[in-house]
Length: 156
Length: 118
Image (cartoon, rainbow over all chains, first blue to last red; front, side, top):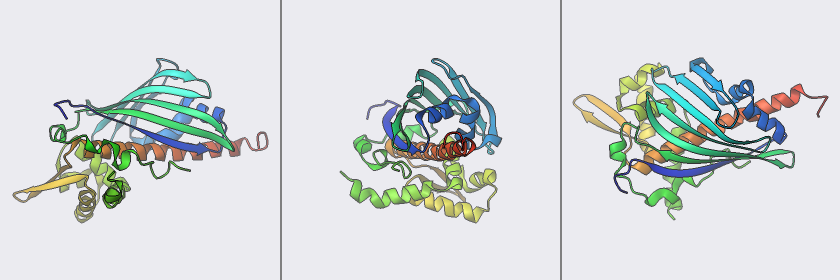
């Protein structure tokens, strides 16, 4: 690895839902519905907005009990009703950007409901405190370990 | 590849990540290195419990510690890929928890619409 301060990976999460693609898409598109399932600590959220349209933004600011401020900013690029959402988002902590991602979510009709495929391409940045040490890492492991394993819930 | 020989290490890593308190500690350490008491403060749990959690995180290869005088300081384990893997594992776990809630939300919607759609 060179002196670059960005490393990359991608991962996929596939889920099946007992609801129509229209219903699953709507759960992503509607701000009230979206917060119902995407915000696990609503009591710590200080700002939330969702402008669901191409080039529209979603902003989510959380102040954790320890005082850390996490900001997630998202921009939607491609929206195909009931079928596909493409967006980019970054995560920053106390003003330092930690990662930037491009995400494609597809909603496919499946027997009994919807097959949702979430693909995230992620750039891991040097906003992390110990990034200088991380540069000693090598690239040999990119194709091993958990990155290629499905997360525990992903195969259903 | 090395998947087979890494299985035990993976088990320890995923076990270490499978606890909300430990994920809060990792969040904290991603921000900056910290002592046991600094990690304990926002969690509101006893120091011995924090020490146990940190031992699990350390055996999971997610954090390392060093002692300076009487203070032991913890930090995210070095190595770009290990750190990125921990980050991605955490992102995936959080996403899967969100999608679990999405599933529950959709099931609730279906119940509300029962009689018209089902």
